[in-house]
Amino acid sequence: MSDLTRMSAAALAAALRGGDVSSVEVTRAHLDRIQAVDPQVHAFLHVDGDGALEQAAAADERRAGGEDGALLGVPIAVKDILVTRGMPTTCGSKILHGWVPPYDASVVTSLRAAGMPLLGKTNMDEFAMGSSTEHSAYGPTRNPWDLHRIPGGSGGGSSAAVTAFEAPLAIGTDTGGSIRQPGAVTGTVGVKPTYGGVSRYGLVALASSLDQAGPVARTVLDAALLHDVIAGHDLMDSTSIDVQWPSMAAAAQVSDVDGLRVGVVKELGGEGYQRGVRDRFDEAVRLLVGAGADVVEVSCPHFEYALAAYYLILPSEASSNLAKFDAMRYGLRVLPDDVAAPSAEQVMAATREAGLGDEVKRRIILGTFALSSGYYDAYYGQAQKVRTLISQDFAAAFEQVDVLMSPTAPTTAFKIGEKLDDPLAMYLNDIATIPANLAGVPGLSLPSGLADEDGLPTGVQILAPALEDARLYRVAAALEAMLHERWGGPLLDRAPELDAAA
Amino acid sequence: MAEPAASSGAGHAMTRDEVARLAQLARIDLSDAELDHLAPQLAVIIESVAVVSSVAADEVPGTSHPLPVRNVFRRDVVRPSLAPEEVLAGAPEVEQSRFSVPRILGEEA
Image (cartoon, rainbow over all chains, first blue to last red; front, side, top):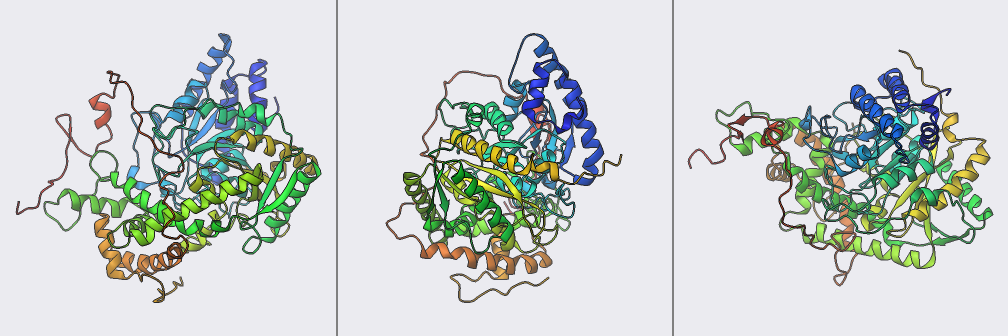
């Protein structure tokens, strides 16, 4: 085994199955890699070396005992918004600094049951509010393609971890694009499953009607293998869908687009999208046509208003969900300076001032406004109607085509600091990914190449009707195979080597 | 940094006083500097999202959730739960196996 950290999760699983390598060796290799490069990348907020090696040894024992799970012994990194028993969970916020949850999220329970050692927790925008991971209270994560640029957000820690070969797989969460947009700007694969496909139990809620956890990986098949591990009905989440999901990994191995009807979304492209992003998207579409797909342009007229609706619905739900950070039962408690015997309310207000960052304050206040008496109908109520119109656009589009396509993000990775204090410019990064969250449909981002003008990764997004997640993998695997052939290998082969200074 | 001024043409102009009032409702103390910083940014955002009011007609029903939400029940049987010390482990202050909190009533009460 030359370099275990360069191998795909599928290849690692095969090597583990063949007895060529142990999970302890694989896990140790990734921990070493984290130690070598994470001081530059800062993908992790917490690394659990001892725990991961213990879990790896247990996975090796299970395999020796005759067990053969698809990813048994393959290590993984988890976004710090999923609670982990015995491991700190901060959501990138000072208000949860040092908090160690007493229970596991259902996704984490699934990972443990599958025998996947947990390497640690990945960095993120505070409470998943952001598109660059710069809003983490613990400092930004850097894009391994260019350490002066952002790795996307909110799940920039997870995308950077797989890009920098610190983990073969990671878990992300996607409320408006936080898995897919980081995938696009780092040249990796990210999938937002159908809403309800993966349990939200133990996922610290940002916007409950939009949040969805999903796979972060370097290949389509790896994402599919992970999707199979985390998907499924959970009694602990009342919005979890009770269906028998088909194997995503099997779908990723079908890889056939002959006769597939593909709709290019008219409203998600053109003006406002960087030249290189558009060029790589057009190339990907031509490859699909060459492989027998039937491509048409489809109009979804209300997508134009998705961003506005989203920035009313999300802050409204967030302002309510984050009310639980009240300084009483867990997390930070700060007493106001100038009050002798402060009330609970005064302590809560002082704690939230000290413990929450700018973007979180902005959105809580925005949500409080949208839900306040006198404005509710004009803002929140109207946004909910727009949400209906967007779902209707999807329904009409999926009567004509099997999948929809667009660029994942309008630009390549921008420089750290460039948009930090211009909230609206930051929000525009999610313009193509938000409609899927509003309608609950699944979406996948696949690397589409490098933009000519800056040499940075671009992504294409594939969207399917609700419950048709497997279709995403079938199409993405076919496109990935054609792109790899064109490039002569995976895109990440062209990423600069990180200086592994120890 | 350059901050765009709030437009008076939009449906609602977010003033500094309004932000202070909302922050109080949301239980977040904001310093004068923070109010100066956040108010114009919020004004721009609200002006931008106000476009929703012109899109949907009255007869369009609202969507609160991407899938139909239904009530979910489980069997009413005893099952394991967290021990009190686990629940209290992350609390800022604990007293006699309980969360210790500041006074919840006004001083005159």
